[in-house]
Image 1 (cartoon, helix red, strand yellow):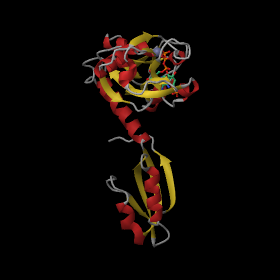
Image 2: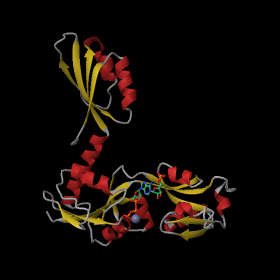
Image 3: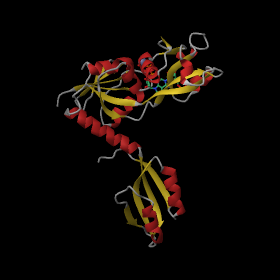
Image 4: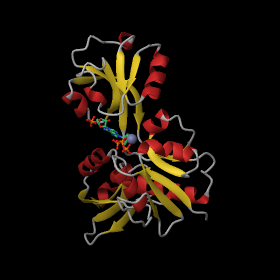
Length: 283
Ligand code: PRT
Ligand code: ZN
């Protein structure tokens, strides 16, 4: 297999999770903070460490074959790349925010107003679709201090917890785009065997993260009720216990409705419930 290159963020919010994901896929590599490139010892891949803003264009131009980057950056750079896999981390929303006591109440009120942002392309597109003309002021960082300094009437920036908005006297006003980290590839690379193998490994890691392995002790008399509470699982294993009226049920359940499911199982007579993380699920 031909050795490919993947670009990930050198430092910042996506770096650690990108490195962790590749390591969970069984890739063995040194992660020196100072290096720009590292070779994976046991997989035909080189890893490039870059500023996130450069990743979509590097992939579009084929300098890297794949990349891990936020959807917001892909959209802002208008890069022509293929989405290979959503990765579920780095979730955030690009929002327009206004000062807490702003007179603005609807999107039309932004007509003629100034909005500071690092995302002029996405913002312009959004406002055009809404039929609103505003004065977009592009600044590269600390957008949230714009209104306080009298630089702009509103801002458009990434929000995750909302803490930065609050501490700058701002409140969210409109959602422009939601985003998460994506594995992207240059056009036409998806069929490459290295990409296909990496994608399969990533999917098995993501699936495992959403799943818990559960062992529960169940009175035989309640077994049918308990098994009905475990839908979606093809066939849970049922094992005998030393106590003749009891069995142990081994199964995997979805992280999402985990507590709801566990509480129903308890109510149906399950006891001694042991929950374990799952490392990988190969479909
Ligand atoms: O140095 P480099 O250019 O590579 O990194 P960067 O500083 O441009 O980006 P970085 O590391 O801050 O973010 C990388 C990616 O993480 C972004 O492109 C998003 O896809 C994603 N992401 C997820 C976020 C956030 N959450 C986030 N909260 N990016 C930025 N923020 C910032 C936001 O700009 C604001 O300043 O965090 C602040 C808001 O956070 P809350 O929690 O207070 O709402
Ligand atoms: Zn950046």
